[in-house]
Length: 304
Ligand SMILES: [Zn+2]
Image (cartoon, rainbow, N blue to C red; front, top):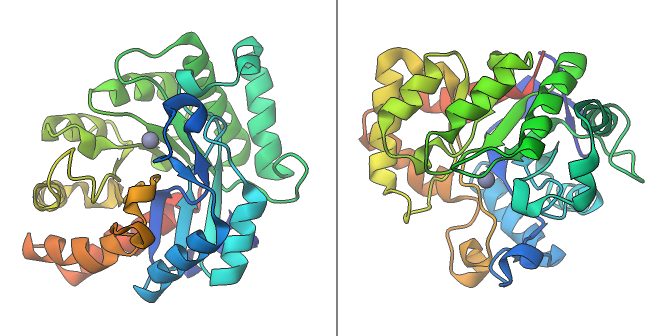
């Protein structure tokens, strides 16, 4: 299998083990949200939290903190070296409210150039390369011109580099609009995932995306304000039974202090410790669970 760029160098995709494909380890949303919940900057705490994921059997995390959320690739490398957990860093831009002002002036070609540089050379001032593009955000009701250009640029960068793409699509059917833009710009749907599909409880939304050949992510596992995990497990099982199993990714999208074990939360081990037994109760076999936690994300992250 192809190599995947982690923050400590290339790793063959089939050696990534159990993967959480959509998480945040170092993130700071204070300048937009004006509260401390979305501020994870304490390195020692994050090393402990990631070590708990490893203890639960986890091996790799895709870290999707992009521009607007204050990415720190060197911090990620430090956490990876201290824990032995492989980390794949995403590049790109979050949604409009988080966009740096200079982004609005950039053309699709300008943005493409920047994404390709992060993937092939490294993040600014480092030799740490991105292994993923995302999470690429849009508002959940309407996609702005700048958000559109970011999606188009990611598709162009994917054509150049074969790197997988992931989006942030909350609550509505906005993922369909994202897909339309990505597909029209030439994205390879085999290595493209629409994110947060489990924040929309209508299974027909998931089916609509899957039927067009794109991946979907049920990456809000543990976020019980969106739906219960029992319902999530049933929905995933239904989609697997309908033949969609090979295009589903699962993760917990942790980006808040209250979700740290240190603060009484579920932590990065939650999916492995608590959610996999729910999938089993819902009727999935061990082989199907391995497909969701290992084979699918490995094949997806391998890119083209
Ligand atoms: Zn998101």
